[in-house]
Image (cartoon, rainbow, N blue to C red; front, side, top):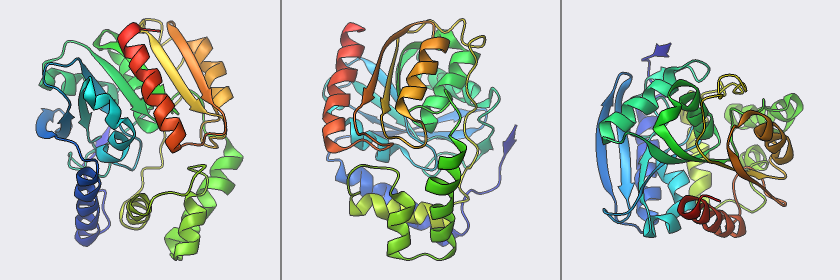
Length: 294
């Protein structure tokens, strides 16, 4: 199921988000290429960075965001891996604005189309939050296309706790959306990180809240039965204090539904966005997993 209406509330809002996209990308200080691949749901824009002869890794960003925001956390990996970071369709970025359901096989089909466009029979994946839920839709739809999977603060494993969704996430979000000011913005994003967010990140979040028809639907939790054929080695990394996807609860269910869960890390004191200390650990841990499989 898909919808082709714009995800933006105005052309001015779209222009602001795309301007911020370029600002974030420029701030990463990396060499990159841009590619466009056609899928059954529309064009997909992909950032490519890292040595051309290095092992390829596909990186998926979180919901209501775009590729440079998540790529910023994984820049160290571009030294040894060729990172392919698509802008998820139907979310802010430079891909088609086609909205598809995250609860059926649509995103799994999209992943297959992206891999076909890149001419990859299969690939290693790193995916954060909403992006991890997309990978689990692909794992149910075409598990043979995934060679390794790193799922960071993943959706698609458990539902967001109702009280957190209402009081810690939803209410502050809508208060800022309806009555925007700097104080309400800080309250709306307080749950995301254990550290003060950088000004550039706050600008992106503010523009998203105000100018995007925010995607509220989360990938549904995958079932053990639909992942029976998903045998790719899997690493799960969660945050102890993540109010959206509480770390220990995610890991407990991951152990039950993933056939080949190699390791699970719950970062002490970490929230949904990683701290600078978390980022250093996460990159080293992922590098080890991709290189040695443990």
